[in-house]
Image 1: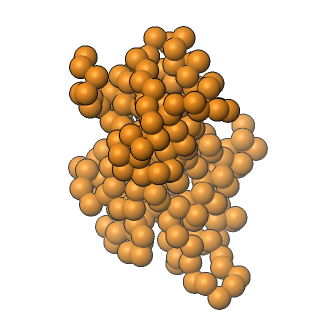
Image 2 (image 1 turned 135 degrees about the horizontal axis):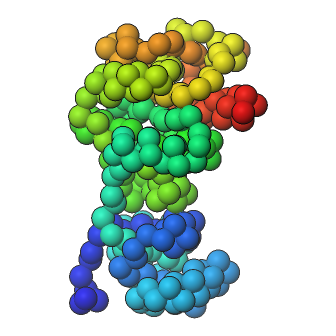
Length: 250
């Protein structure tokens, strides 16, 4: 491969690159800042052991390559992000002997919010995330960076029709919960068995047809003057409640 070629997807930041290495992703090329110290040396050693092509570059070159200055001295080109399928998510849950735990993101257009939710979903033990094929942020380098690398581990599927996706889940006896402002207190919900959590987009909330298809709608009670949380924060709170109750009921 010519060293000037730019294959695949560019990711940057120490955690995303380390997670990509740890997760066995195919790394086409690692760019590392000259005279890097600390965690950067660990990344260099791991990549070298794995046989990853490495280029030592000046900081200004990394600034130009990534388009940011917050790259922490490392960047990598990984093979194009491979989306999962619903079937692969089902199979992964079955291989772990666990009831399905899946997150449906209905119109999250901010890549930072998408990355944040993917990070929370991975940390809470979700088996997969589903995003629409249209009117949604895709998994980009910004999403991978915002997820602190969790996006390279999480199975992310794309659905052309979220309503049909919910219907398919319900056919498999998955209980679908919507997260919206006018639902029941999430503390009062059991969240047992196979669970899907549907989260709406920034500002617009859950689409009407999606909301109507949900088995139940839950909300987060607000005690202060602010009426609601952003999608990333709200999703994290309920995802960890689901994780806690699933572990408690096992």
